[in-house]
Amino acid sequence: MDDKLEKLKREYMNIPIPEELDFTVRKALKESEVNRMRRKSHMNRIRIAAASVAAVFTVLIVGANTSQVFAATLSKVPVVGSIVKVLTFREYTVNEGTFNADIKVPAIQGTENKTLENSLNEKYLEEGKSLYEGFNADMEELKKNGGGHLGVDSGYEVKTDTDRILSIGRYTVNTVASSSTTMEYDTIDKKNEILITLPSLFKDDSYIDIISENIKKQMVEQNKADSDQYYWVEGIEQDSSMELFDKIAKDQNFYINPEGKLVISFDKYEVAPGYMGVVEFVIPTDILSDVLVSNEYIK
Amino acid sequence: MGEVSLAEQITDYIIKNKERHYRLAYSYVKNNDDALEVVQESIYKAISTMDSLKTPDYLNTWFYRIIVNTAIDLLRKRKKVVVMDDETLSHYDLSTVDHYADIDLHKALEDLPIQYRSIIVLRFFEDLKIEEIATVLDENVNTVKTRLYKALRMLRVQMDDCR
Image (cartoon, rainbow over the protein chains, first blue to last red):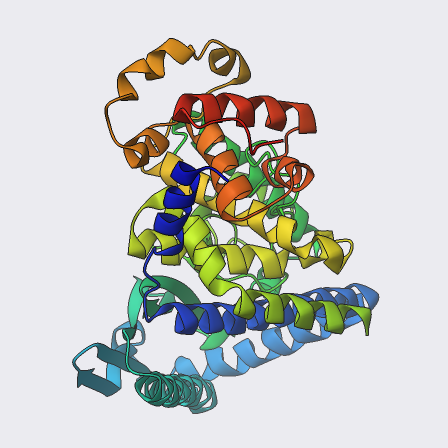
């Protein structure tokens, strides 16, 4: 080979390898493995649900019964909406040079339905704790290998707090040179004190297709208006080796915004390249009107 | 069973070749943070699209292709690259590189249009065969040969060693 090419190759081979590389790679492998498994279990869940529509009905009936009970209980309580609140229950922090963690665990207070309140709060605490423990384990591993950068920032934001609805979003940002972000929502009906799930809002599973089609349309429209708005979806992504967004999961992340609109949320890397971050789509209520159980939550 | 072993093979391959992947990403984006992001994002994409990999024999070209596409996406986002269409490329006049004659070789390589630079990197630094480069870049073999020839001429490298 020519001298000059040899010289260029040497330069290329001398590109310094950062110490975080090994960790970044292992972390990405671990995370994508988890995502793959989660996606698989979503698929299974959809299959099971499709096989037994009856199951969905059962849930709805239980929901309605429970609401009546709560409606009765609540009629004795004079002020309802204002006493339910969200506060920081516990905070884990690590501050050791290049290792930084800040994990805020929220807790809901003031609902009459202690079962719901406790189960949510326990879930929050459990997840906060395991996040903290995971961070510590990763930190020790990095230290053993000569150090590096590692950060985790987790907290919550109240997306909606009306008389009727409380939507809490909990985010986790993992930083290893670049970052991954996940967002998880819980929405409760403050009046009836029940947890609202996505399937419980609709008469049947047809919402999955209706919402998915609308999101795909929104993605392409956004991209037409501004080519920086990039999604892995048919009509934008040309690379045939990429997996394109097809459908939302049956229990896709969602919340209800203060205007009473359904908002569907995707984690970083779920449907778009990393620079797009967490992406959200507001679903117009008129396209949902035929499949909504009622207009009580979604307006 | 088949899938489990494929996932394991991909994981092993990624861990074993991470430095090569990083260098390839770096050769496009030119900085540490972006190169790490490209590697990370390529892993996400690879694992989520592993069903598209028919046989582990093509693992290397398949993963290189993901890296190259991810890196170009990132550059496009940062507006650091103009990906020329074929027509513009074919008019890319060799005379435009004349003034590189006195500048150093490194600069000449950096200033090559990205389609040409990719081929130099993959052929001479990563030692890929022409056929493999064609797969990575999703071009046909003849296009790759033509561009390689042209790229070398632009670099003013003697043609002796290149097929």
